[in-house]
Length: 517
Image (cartoon, rainbow, N blue to C red):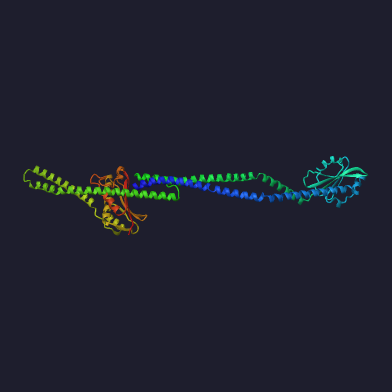
């Protein structure tokens, strides 16, 4: 018991320390990776920025953007020169001089589009080298203010870099007759390359400007994702650690209660994990300890009762013989002739001798109970024992096992045990005025079961837990040693005996013996 108390106290301290260690371990496991991951990600991000945002890349992008602008300006210049040359060609002048429709020199148009306007900005004619090109009407609505211009120039078109528009006045005889607008498409490939270079260059400058913000934003995003995951991991860890700690706390508490003497304590088993296995083992251990404790108590009580019985047998048996002899002498020595007195003397002598014989029988019971010689174990078939009892008690229904059921037992002592149970059952049904007694042999879980049942008066509830103790009996006669001797014999065989009884409905005594050969 002192060991269990020490174990329970140690268990409580260990459970608390285990809880603290589990939570600390979970916190460490969840938070420790934050710092190395943070520095690794930050380092990789900086390296990526340094690779992308270095001076060589910046110079290359600037050079590409400059080259694209130079090519575009050169293309604008060539378009303007073409427009000036077209304004001086004879076929263009004929359009203004005579208003006639002529076939343009498509080679001179250089794949472009040519519009003719008078001095008021009215569209006179249109020629195009590629009718399928989508020259927008939006350009023409912005050309009227150009009527007053006298020198060729590039028109800033609203269509972006898809087209280049060049204005050139047309002179006839030294006078301005109108003007032309030459629209030249830019190659799609060049458009895309130019737009891409400009876009990448602008994006590079923007990112370079906000490099610090990009880094902090990336780290903030990383932490906003990692920290909730870490918090969730910690929460789940605390939850599952609680599921582990609670059964251990219950186990420690149960150990403390057992150490204080509460042998009915059991740990509830609600799961199928390792903790459940420990709890089941604990419950089995407590059950065995309880059984051993009860057996030890019974053995201690039995030893005490045996000593008392030995003393009583000695003290009672010694004076009985002298008392019987003196009474017999009183009877024999009387020589009177008074018949009434002689009759009284004979009756009193008979009563005293009967009571002396009763005391002698009680002394013999005490002596037998105190002596209880050792077992004489031999291998035998329990079915043969039941067959013997069936001959001795034909009124009792004896049902054997369907096959040989051999084990090592003391035949004579086990026979007396069953006779004791049968006699008690017969006495119980006689008190009730009728009933039946059955004796049955069965086997289960590597043990033989001898069941003696009756439909008699049953055992009062207040005596059921003490029925196997010495000097406890439901009979008016006897000293109540029979069932105590029964349990001792069964216990010495390594078995156990139990009772189930309903008052007024009968009793069932079950003996379980291990099947050992």
